[in-house]
Image 1 (cartoon, helix red, strand yellow):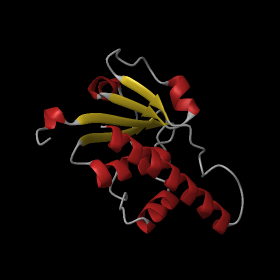
Image 2 (cartoon, helix red, strand yellow; image 1 turned 45 degrees about the vertical axis):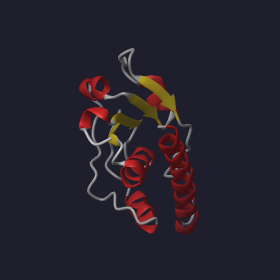
Image 3 (cartoon, one colour; image 1 turned 120 degrees about the vertical axis):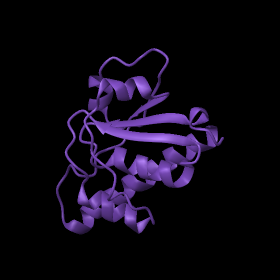
Length: 142
């Protein structure tokens, strides 16, 4: 698969486009980027969470240059596959063209919840590993 037309276009969607969708975009770019075109967006983008950047850096992936973008209809029209990573995005997503495949990866938001920094980072690492498994499965089936 060398031409852009043969690449599957994947759009990751979350509410804030700050944690889970950013991790998914980073993993898919790093592990399968030659076979996919990848975008991520949020229904209410909040910027990339600094913990997401740090935790992905631990895994050898730099997501610091990715952007936190607001979902626009042309993104939905562009996609072959829409993957929601939170229930809010799944339930409140605008109308998706019928030819776009939809999937949902039910992942908890590690930025919600209290605790010491060590506990918070542990939640981020757990989410990172869950996202990585989902992305590896997506690549394996493509």
